[in-house]
Image 1: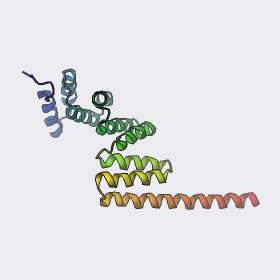
Image 2: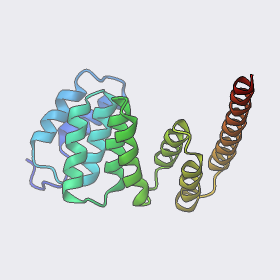
Image 3: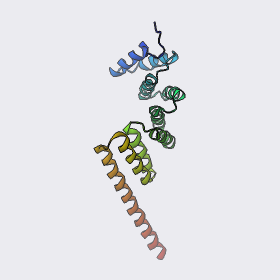
Length: 177
């Protein structure tokens, strides 16, 4: 009998085991049953949301992350989870908004920073991408991975600048005819 609503129930624990054993067939049903019960533990909800997201159950994952954010709007991991849902749905702009919330809370998830930088690079906003990586170094540590990202952004910015210059020269040559 479950007496403490903050404890993860047997369905959640069994779902984690089955997912670990690569038996996803029953996991979704177990997690949905668990969510119908009263569970206020933010870590359980975050883990459940991640598992559901891995199983491509985006709507149920969103419900988990929103429950966490309703209880604690300062929970950066939930914003990261929402961003992951939107990335799966190929909504880069929405994803970027949630990633910015997550990194604004100094979430200690390196992927939040690198995904944000990647989106900014795809938008050719290299200055903001570099700022995000510098912030990541402060929050998660100055790892080789982040130093590599710094170099990658600088190279992409230089490449784009060279291409812009080349196209400007080509346009000028066409105009002068």
